[in-house]
Length: 176
Image (cartoon, rainbow, N blue to C red; front, side):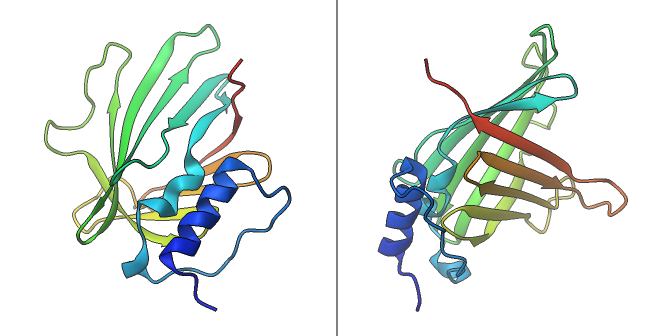
């Protein structure tokens, strides 16, 4: 049974809102030409984890219009920033794209002015999104986001097969 766009959007919204406790998300993948900004709704929220003895945080807005906005920050144990990252996901006429840029603690850009890292949404379920590097992207091979009962898992893969993927396990951050 194929999941339509409305069903996918509803499923993603229900999972993101946590309205169905213990419900298993559908594993069926929509066709690549049916992926929309609603395909990443499950990522919305504030997420926090440990990284190299410090803290990593990732925040994602809910989809609004054709876009989602995100930010990542990596802090040392004493709270000193190691790096910031700005992320944007946009639904465009030929697909859904993730673009990101890295910044130093003083907001010095790591990537060239007009050259953000660019990946395209290749697969999605109600709880997983797989972005693959576009043809000209040589710095990243893939970014995979997966929502679990415990949080958000992120895997970053590189074009060099000898380089180990980065893996982040982030938990929902308390909003108190």
